[in-house]
Image (spheres, rainbow, N blue to C red):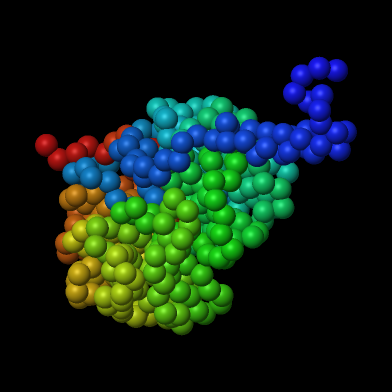
Length: 391
């Protein structure tokens, strides 16, 4: 034997080989990670998750219009879930205890479906060409063709919808997840871990370079902001006594809402330091918001709408006559509301109804705006509505 290893003992050679193997295994995964990119922008042609984008505002910067018409509709044999997502000309619709359906936004034609061996959980999301599909047993990430890219077995009840406290959030090509060992960031394409902390908090919204999280059990919660690059905590609020349902963030405003039974609460915080700005209670659990710089509209369990000034907390208007509401979408000049009888167009400044379109299909489940169309999901079908912007 000749060469540099000739003078090494057998034990030294074994140690050298082991170290090389360990080093290679440590280096190899990094080759499969994409660059860490938390660019949260979402095209107006897409609706990535409940709330539209990681800021969770239910807002699209278009004018909107009153004239709605049905372009196509698709019935489902199974009862639908409570969320949908839109990307790359595809709308993703879950059905209970069944499958995730991928439909063409042009005509509703089914492109593919994914049927896991466990019931789907609430909250479908898309990011960086991938679809997050949680079940009550596992967490799947699918490619744009419906094939499984990677999965986390035994990670149950992960959601980003109000029926369960949010536990994951995709931003750019990064998946933030409340994993078994704490808050973590994973590469959306490979599933490999970027970083992990031991803090058990649920990622709920993202804005202005901050990952907003919540933590708590039953009737208490506290909010926190984290550096998305390493998970370090920037600030944390005191503990508040109400059940958290969701958060949304706009420039200079973080809105948190929730409650239980006949008591709901909405709060706003300064996103820079977590300071409480104002809070208001209402007579019903709050389950969703539509947020813009000048207005926040909160939805109650049974369809009540409460409009507030996000700077002062002043109550601007209230609607209690709409019945159950399955989603709101705010544009620059309209507030679209998905009711049991169809979709109504409201004036966001006054709450007055401007127009409406009747739909069948039963209980409203979700509403999204993408590519100039409102997608209204009911318990038994999906409607694509053409929206003509004001001239």
